[in-house]
Length: 251
Image (cartoon, rainbow, N blue to C red):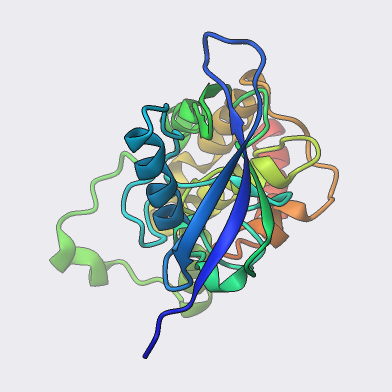
């Protein structure tokens, strides 16, 4: 079976942290196999750049299995690209046509400053997690899990929220660069379970206040975050977080 190849023009945002202004540069991606992932395509382009003595394109990646949340870029105006419920590393080149021009740029948010090219500093998410995204109660080992009964409905809701990988696509997709879907998912998946209830009030209060302090925008119910989330986290998590925050503020 013959592997299909395509030729593409890439418009890639190039910028260093030391340079306040960046810009798009054009590159040609030749003989790209449609079996490649988007990141593998960038690997091929970078190999050609290195061989020609040019600076390779910097981009984040790790597991390349849609699990770690490291990868991410805006492709043709869409976070993680045109395929829904898909991370950038899972986006394959068969979804593009030969001759296409692809515009690739980093997440755009004040709280995610550009480090280099497509790499942004997402340590703001780490700071939000450190402010309350944990439980301190002793839960024992894995064999003790069944000692705490959790209803299926609650377990399913917590599991759905826990699917968030913290990639930042919700922030990049939101016109206000809001992180409320991310924070809502973390508040839900910990607060719904009995192990997380003792700290539910302080958790939501601290995480929301930290999010605001770090410069993320407010939610205006555009729902772009839900549409672009590669794990289909629902905006219901934002509503639950808001309810928890109001209760925590008046108790």
